[in-house]
Image (tube, rainbow, N blue to C red; front, side):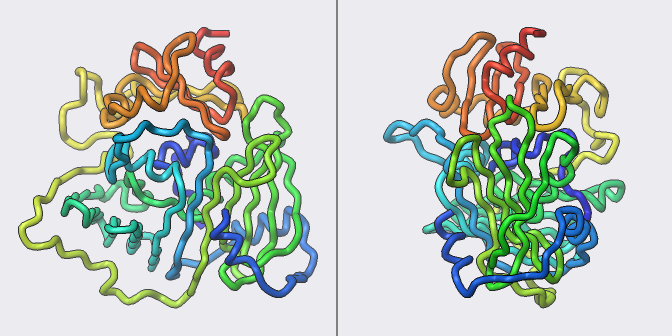
Length: 359
């Protein structure tokens, strides 16, 4: 299947930038599974050769990253920084429909509301029923094959597994654990264990469908932990092609529609670039320090959405450290420097401080 995430983002950072057990455990119960033995290489080939391009399913996501509790009265919203934080806390349910790369619908189900992300060809619509917000995103022809990540969208097991598997290198030990069952389907348990000592990640477990090679569930454990800090997996799944009408979206009558244009592969949209910087120039490109599980990404000033950098929640979630303010979780650390740059990695915060200081 196509790799659909930005190649420079460390795999463990995906839940934060997308912003990214018990319910999943209930879906795995049942008769014991005894599949034909396969080597790690054979299971990796199954994933690489997966040809599933149509499905309907329910996805459950659960996060227990050890984020500091917000004080009473601070609300987590459905957009901007609120949507990012919302996906990093508690459990969430989404219905996912797929018919090829250009027909995708994700319905994030909340207690009293629903958020929809619908892609049909070059059009992407988002809708939040809590406030009636509608956004229309146009995808340029040069970017037609790209996956569109929308704030507040629950990532699927395919998304997360694809990013982790793309990053597999000699710094990763790959093994096959016990056979399992997810969403009523038998699966191999592909386990990725970092050999690096300076990463927060203990292991990543990917349940791979025994018939199709589709990733069905991903569990990420922090180093030294026995329970996942982040889990996303199917609890129901069908490979029947969804009805075409699911990918048609009509804005509700009277809704205000916010128009956006996705930058093309060169980074241009036809609009002036901020601060006089040429669109797509290296000035806005992230820089990388380290390799494998110890990778640190430095995001240039202005890269993070202003909804995050100016959010009142920022002060509640971060603490002062040498070189700026830090957000620390069990899987990911973020260092926000005074000059507006941000360092992100699946490493302890002191590693980010050292990179910021040039050590």
